[in-house]
Length: 150
Image 1 (cartoon, helix red, strand yellow):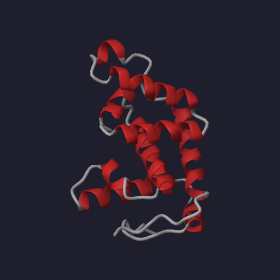
Image 2 (cartoon, one colour):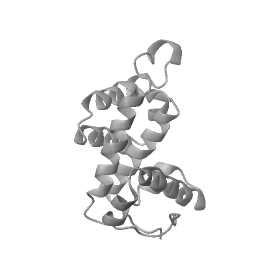
Image 3 (tube, one colour):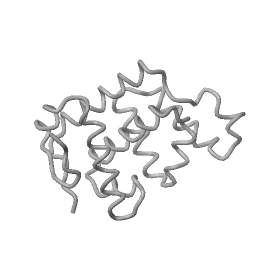
């Protein structure tokens, strides 16, 4: 069943869809942002903090799956609040090494990618699988439904 990008879904319905729901909700958020001509992070800012953090993590997962470096991702989040929320969410899901790399990336985002970005690349595929499962667990454990678009 195709997900309606603008409707609400309760956590039980999300869990029943399995791991693909992470990417399905991500597509829904991209569609919402595109509909009102805004950046992804800005569209997420209208969600509750738990959903905002979870969708930002899903967005990061998507970027890692495209093998983007952490500084490249951080650069696309100009708001310090978004960066702080991402770092806090990574710590919350027991990803302190990634959280530290995001903090380090803030210091080198304006530097030459060839020199200071070493060691700040995307995690290996096995790590991405674990991250995907953690994000799915977050979505499944939400106390509130994924909100409909207003």
